[in-house]
Length: 212
Image (cartoon, rainbow, N blue to C red; front, top):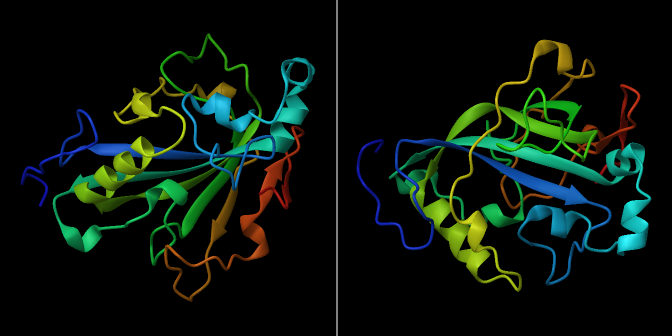
């Protein structure tokens, strides 16, 4: 299942057996629940409810209060036992998927960021699944198909982007928090969360409830 090729219809340049990290930005300044919720580049989406004048007045704390990212890492396999139909809507909570979460403050990321060039958008809250999970190639192809159907042109997100260099220890936030789901199963269409799932960063080394 790691080497059997898959005939990609929508995603560009992806391969079975490779590992990819998916980010789901959340924003109180975005357009959640509307046809404009999903946009490329994602900066447009997370700040689309702000006019230019309001955007220019945002402090670092305003960004921390409003914006956060969830992330999961997947190895792509050609095996329909690992099919999840709706990656567009958020990260997977199903058994071991989304169970062991690290929460911390960070910034936006990508190849234009480094240990010398900082992001303009920081601090933001990250919730990252510590484990790498298997997922079917068809799940990613469904995700790319869904991107293609959005009102905004999301073509530039239908291929994998590069990752930034590893952050120096001296630049890493020291406010990491842990979260593990309880013993009951969580399915990817399940919407019941405990309070620890809703955290936001205050910019002073603390994480609080009711982030998103």
